[in-house]
Length: 500
Image (cartoon, rainbow, N blue to C red; front, side, top):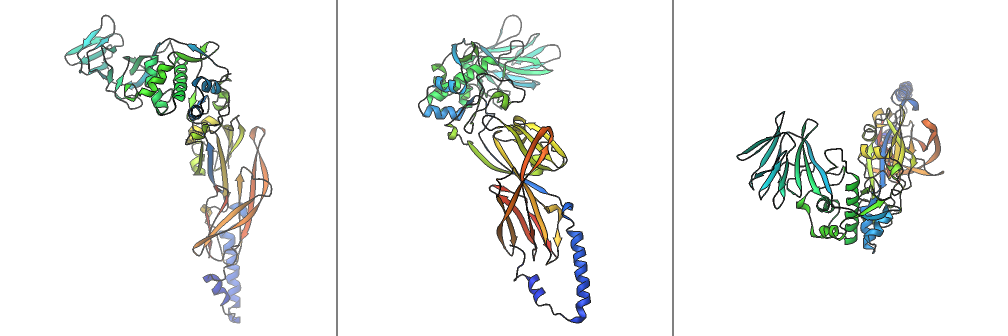
């Protein structure tokens, strides 16, 4: 208990002070002034601000909807076939045979020019017959304001329609980086279209060839064969479900859809998995499913309507147990420590942030709805937006906030022999009878003691209730001392009480 330090300089000076009668009046006056100074410096408890610190722990990596890639890895390690894996993650699906149709991949937009080449002769076609460009020549496409202009060595031609480049053998190489920063060989054709006032580079590629540049980017080729097959089928269904006949392109080349890098990333092991499942597509009601997938679940996947705001319930996208997800490196994560401002600013908290309080969780315990509780009021946010705004691995998260008053910004001070109350709140509440730990530092080392808590609650808008544990303790430091509270992995900010 940090109330009296018999060896501190202040204490020794007090014990050895002579009690001459002539000094009694001065000492009395000094005592009165000290009390007055204490009232000014420390002030009533209500004058102090409370400062909070946040600790976040969680499970999983990604949105949590559909197939967990690390979970599929685990099932394959335990002898499951790719169809069994897919049926587990996508409830009630069947399988159909689909054609090797063309997928249009948006490689990059907002361009002023696009550069394409090929080791062998290649062609360019707008309207009319195709023109041949010698192998090794770079073809640059720009837009003049009324036509597409293609310049390739001595070849110069204007096209009224978007030009499309095609190889005569081997694969085209793009020299303009994609949205993933890749420059390299791509199967199929490259179309350069003017969209939104700028040029867009679009890869028209057969589905099975497209998958060869997707699967090894989404999972490691070293994974078990059945997990690679499951990934190939999920990617196949996702691609077909994403086709947009009335638009210029179907899918992004990055993680907004499926990461795709072309020929340079292809691997014999993933190519074999794609060939081994050629044309096999997970379907529901005879149509390709929206085969959402992600890295690791933390042990349970989530219903789509609970994970994504505005999404409707989908029969095959229901949360399921994921017992082998523990292979994933983000199966468990945290603790992540953040200040109130680091959390409150991106969440647009009203005033100083006190708590991110979960009011609704999904089937997997992912956050569906959370209250952003600030000193100036409360607002609500869905779990997906919370994950994105704070850069969390997953919405399966637990936010613990712990406060201390007086806070460091109060610069509280007292005179030796006086006392001051330290207090705070812990969100969410601990069990009845729980204690927190007060840590205090003076004379070169940290000490600690237990502090009792009481459970309390505050009403939130919309009929919700936030429960917290309150704690308080009176301390009388004989010298300047640092303090903070802790409970498990959670810590409050540190404050300093200056002793004059």
